[in-house]
Length: 103
Image (cartoon, rainbow, N blue to C red; front, side, top):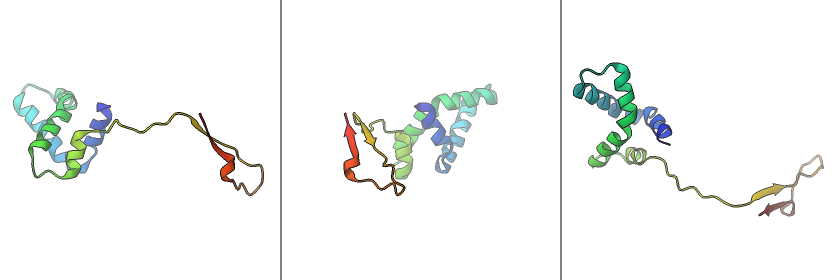
């Protein structure tokens, strides 16, 4: 799930300045890191770094705060399936009686 979250962050225009700042901070702290190692470290640590920065910033936009939280894993689910009987008439008109929920 964090890979998908990182993908969304890396492809959101409002997050780009934070990505640049994080990479700059990584290279400043670790002068010996080559570009590949900076990229790997960025992918490993950016989500937590971004979350900390956003929640410390009282002026951060609501969109950035929602992006920092990450995906919501609470998804409504239902048991059963919907069975639809398609009539053989050319008009393909269906009535409510032809749709039923099977559990």
